[in-house]
Image (cartoon, rainbow, N blue to C red; front, side):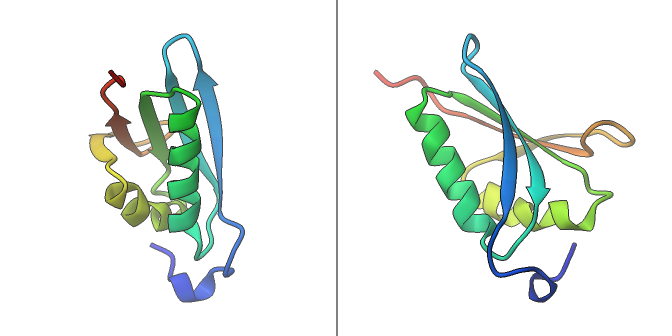
Length: 101
């Protein structure tokens, strides 16, 4: 995992693909920075406001900077679901929110 000390202070980015029909979003890290936790929190809040119930994140653990997002994702309720070596994403994390009543 990349050392946070070597990362820029701000500018972390996650790409989001949203499927409104299934209320699912897939996130992929674009740029790691020390503000990854704030970016994850904000992205998940925005997705919730958009009615997304299922969030899937693909981390490529071959890229050291993708691992910077892992602690924040775990803190915000995402759970590791699969380790997929040599695929589009090495680690799949998922969070499913129960529908609002």
